[in-house]
Image (tube, rainbow, N blue to C red; front, side):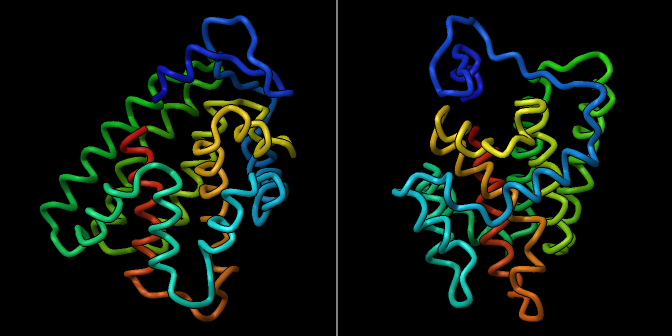
Length: 224
């Protein structure tokens, strides 16, 4: 999918420009702490930029009741429904889990390698690649809540590599939905992961629900 996006360039108004590639850039004076703060302030819990046909699905992803049917619906909206449903039970099989996470790791690593950054940002890009193995280790150890929180940071860093300073703008959701609606929905999902504890407060769901939430992003990036 990344090759498809490399052939187009969109401006802030969503109009295609005559350019052979999207240049994924980042600026050395744009600090991670500022980026992380703005992403969470501007994007978490934001539904207004989501197209109406996806808004109900997004609002239902973190309900007070049974999440599993809603998570499956969200996966369908991302175009990964069949793969998602097939992998829901993989958590119970250590060998199959290890195999799946290997595919995820390889694909995400290739995706990161395809991004272009300034020389001053190479270390940041390399650190993101280095974070993948500890992240998958948390999953294999059954530490799903820390894994989800880590995944939220990984996705935000990935958005920064893809879009640079644009990823911290207030209209980032609108921008990504104009480029591709499924991709926009995925970036929205990523910004929700870091605030999961706040969403559920003292009633944190069990591992089956946490796995259902985490698997959405794993499947999407494995098939990106």
